[in-house]
Length: 99
Image 1 (tube, rainbow, N blue to C red):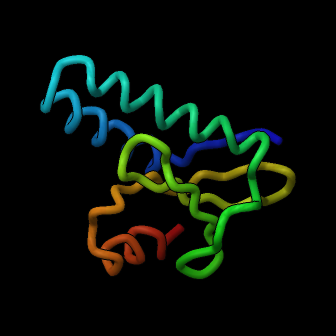
Image 2: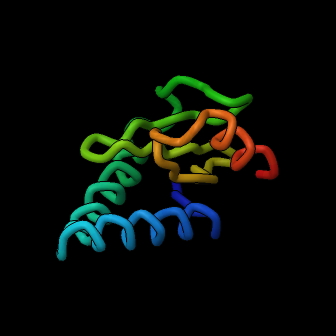
């Protein structure tokens, strides 16, 4: 299956990168590498994760407090959001509503 990131998911990754890079030089790169490894794991594990907020599968990132929200459509893994788990669940639900 092909993995496709939405423009919103790309923005979420950029925001996470900027945050962690501001904490310590190089940490932003580690954040991106870790999250992209989690995303790549969907080639093997897509569809086995719990469903949250309607019909989004949620993959919990291994090294950072983030979740990857995705759907499987037409033999494609569509990543709609990559969000910080420390946010209010109502905020997360609002981010996923228009997708």
